[in-house]
Length: 262
Ligand code: T3D
View (cartoon, rainbow, N blue to C red):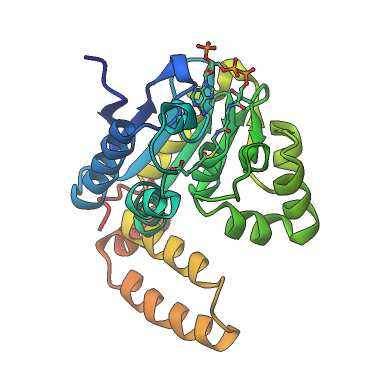
């Protein structure tokens, strides 16, 4: 049987490919669990120093598989609060709490929760043909998978509300211009550039990169005083790492550092 998430570890990068291309990689329960297992693995395995997430075929991810929500099949209305708590929210939390870079290569359309999982990643690259669609309002739902939070924070209320209420697609160049993503790239260079970036980050000072991620995310709720205290504490930790000693020594020796990730 075909795997719903393809996983391959290359040069410290865990490459994860959502793999239900006939359904534009929309989420069924199996794909949810397969993705979660892989991100948990990234939390635990020190050999994994970055994650690269993408989709198979022409789409990145079309959110929930609506075939699994067909009301014509009868039965009670689904408890979507329960499905968010059971399937989407754990994955979102695992991505955000992973103290290693998560790069998303949005290879095609990203709709509903698919768009918002992309936006939860640390660095998002998108093919110029890709589109981001807050598809929820088209079917009577609200933005989930962290989208109501990330869109409001990234874009501010005017654009967040317009995108969520209208479900209008945003193309990759516009997403980059609005700061929703890092870069829009020509379709044929996306994967090479994403892999090069992920490999570069995987060869970096993983501990320091992880603390940096934690710090920047904490700024969402911290005061400046709290953030300054946190910078002090995390810099103390970073300053004790072998990678910091290597970084300074390499600079003084005028050579490339060889970071070990700790
Ligand atoms: O339920 C819960 O647990 C709550 C959580 C909800 C989270 C959510 O994500 S809700 C939002 C769900 N997603 C959508 O509403 C998006 C639905 N899809 C679309 O609007 C369009 O497919 C796209 C705009 C994404 C792409 O359009 P297009 O024209 O490029 O492709 P297409 O022809 O619509 O789709 C290609 C195939 O993928 C097609 O199958 P077919 O006809 O070739 O056999 C289509 O049915 C299938 N597909 C696309 N999206 C989904 C899907 N099948 C199931 N579920 C999908 N979400």
